[in-house]
Picture (tube, rainbow, N blue to C red):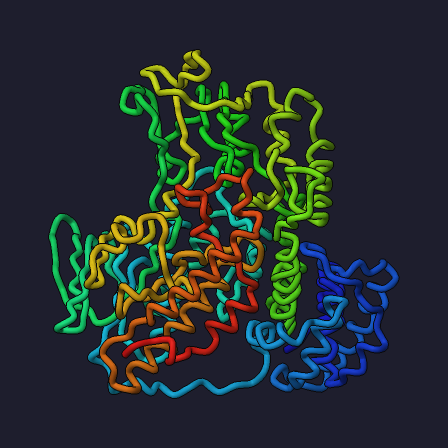
Length: 624
């Protein structure tokens, strides 16, 4: 590879210098070079320069120009040095400015995927009579297909929509984008060096999943516009009887193993408000945005101020004649000036051309966004200072976030409306680059902290007054507590939904004692609200599922079912931990909770705990 000094020098101006410093170990083969370089300070989420000074960066840049240039003058890219696990650990410590706990090293090494390894043989080639049904062709369904194919297991996907992508296909509203840094929000084995933004918008995310879908030739096994309606496990034949419908045609078939990849955010939730059918204008849920203009020059109402509304409102506000927002409770916001920022060409060049730069940059995004926050989310029983915080660290964050919001507010009438009265992180934390509060200051925008009483033919009745609108948008989330809805699943002892309602029971959110030969990805209690990305969790889950299926087939078992006592032990630990956490605080009400105020959607576990549990399948937890 021929790299000009001028190209490299320009690109390094866009570099993360802790990452560049670590890369010099690869280029020199000498771990001791780190001792000669300026040391980054302790890493903070979103800060990728280790608080290095301009002088420190220049020292690293000069040495990098020299050593990388020398390497390419004398070596081929294949000659790049692969450090030992101990050296990789030392490089991790250097980059994040602290010692990475030994508990986390295996997980981080696994995600880095730098050490050499051989792929396992396709040992299931003789088992081709088995076919797994994957329900859903979103992020987790595509991932499941890729990983099943890797170990030689046939699969097919049934997808209710007419195209792939799941949530990134359905949520095409203005402003829709991811709120996890994209260079981490991607499959660990399928990097994209050309993200145009640090937090990419929906079309680019959908394009990424489409490229993965076609790269791995998944389309030949996917059936679109096919809705699974109900399924029942036949104990006698030891398989599922699955009913589906496609273009009005019903079908029943026998399936050995089913993996649900329908997720938690697939059934739009519209509040039960009187008069919904009376409204004569445009009315829709945010995930069902129409393909014609219902905004420009219109009087628009947005019901809700959660994650979707937070993105929609700044995107449409200036186009509306009037925009009125109905708020149940305000969101907490995490200051993030990069939220709408583009990735410059220099960074794209480094990600694509410098060996392992992208892996170490991903690590730098991953590590501070793993479990460091979790300890601050436990309620301190002795904390009596305020009711809108739960401990000293949480209160310090409350002060930080409050100050950041107050600094953006010039209209003092907004203060009481936008500062939450519940503890930070109690609900989904939103990324704040100033766009939300700027929109609320526009003269045509009104924020109402009051409920919607009913819908009339002309608009919304609130506080006894009728407000007229052309368009009503429900940014009111999803029926996240209705797991596997609208599919009726009977594992042999009755409908899962009727047995458990909105209080699901599972083991690891993956397996269920009442449903043999059934696995879930993004199942109960696996949403992430404190760390990581849902893709990380999904990779944990599919690795575990593949291990379970491999064990089952290797031993010629036809049925796998988690033991009820194992499920109960796990569920009891899950519930007990949540009793101590912010998401179940008395002042918090959110989609994480069921009708009784109990958290059922969101994980209370450290990422490293969940990674360890899913990294090794324990056959003793199961009946065969």
